[in-house]
Length: 280
Image 1 (cartoon, rainbow, N blue to C red):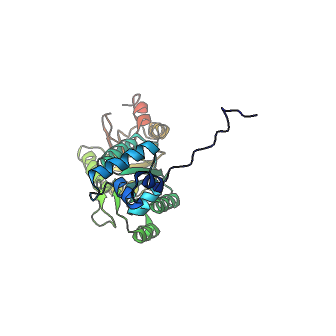
Image 2: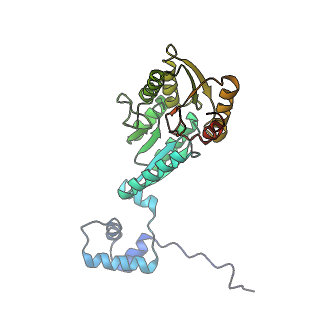
Image 3: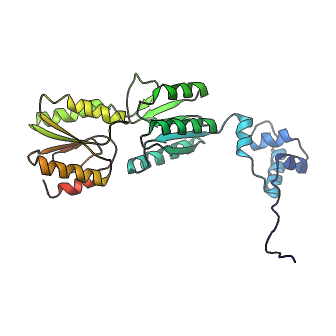
């Protein structure tokens, strides 16, 4: 007993040679049309494109990449997808790449260097034509990997002319130094510096070192918390409980609208702002 509504056989995938045979041309000519080569006449292009439409042919992207040596993709390996700043960055990056005919693939590492290396290797094996990473601390194994694949690498969130790769961003230490200088110049003698985990984050370490350089000019308390709303709230609770007289918080995260607060870096601090409503 047959059930016409079930068990229908899958139609075989149309191949490049099927298009060539139906159009009465060579496989090479079809390939040139698909790759928009200028050497094919307009009439031949029109005939082949009509066959492609009739047969519902879709080019194999892997075969196309192998044939052309191009994937037109760029890989971005970032620390986390949990914060809005990274979403905005990736959106702007994807728009810019699309304008030049490139696609974006993304991986997050949660500040795990081994995972970063694995994801970078995976992207390179996929054939990405470039890599974008945050920060400058990626190790010798990563450098050797990118040298072997010979692809361009760009580092974001830092500015360091002496880095192994081009950098696009800002000097984390210099900006922190400017902020600390401002606090000292405006009479703040006691500063609580709130920052995220620094062990696997070279940008955070640069900011912390720059802040600690002012230890002889003001009293500094370092508070490390998770980069989350809960982490920000916990940092303020610690300040309020132990050092209520600390009248300045230096947040090594995003910009802040509350008064007598300075912040640098890239991640949110809504929890900090909420907790401060009852303090200042």
